[in-house]
Image (cartoon, rainbow, N blue to C red; front, side):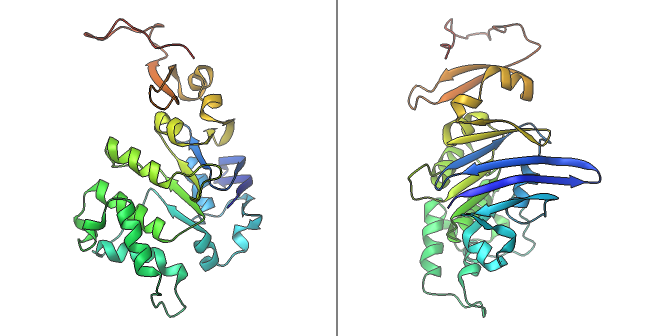
Length: 278
């Protein structure tokens, strides 16, 4: 499903948190939002999954205004994993994941034939099937995150919105989760819009990147096009050295503080080689 964000603006108490953002993601594409803290990533995503109302602009799914859809129809098309997902009651993991099926159930809330298989498949997909009968509140942070991703997948959305989905996950889990939810042009998975702090994860798993700074898009394109040393110095205030991942060929970044001299000070035991320029 195509996702179009047109002129989105969020203004609170006279301050523009998001300023006239336009973003497009073709079906199956993974589009990443990157930017420093306070750049407007979460505020933008909250408008996309309807937790907040923008001051201006439109979010469209295959041309349909998201605000014109009923909550049920919107939830059938779009699922979200926000940063704040509080659960005060100790549901079992199976019950939490089953919440993702509510948009597909009748008005009476009765489970349908597809609900149980969809939940079981989602838990298996994130490697959490063994947690099904555990209480959600007793899980570790990483386990909770996997369960919430399973809930979103059980919803079987055509657009998936993720706000820092790798929080609380170790390195292996980060790579696994982003591989699971990622799509790509011509692939079957949902269109994904995600905010990520880790630029190397964004470079590896996103087809497109939109760089936000003070609420505005300052660059967009493929990771190769966007993650340039001048832009990273301007937006993130770091000196970046671009290298190629030896297995995937994707651009990866090494960082110094801007205050450090070019080349930096080698750490004890560091090799004599230097990254190949791109």
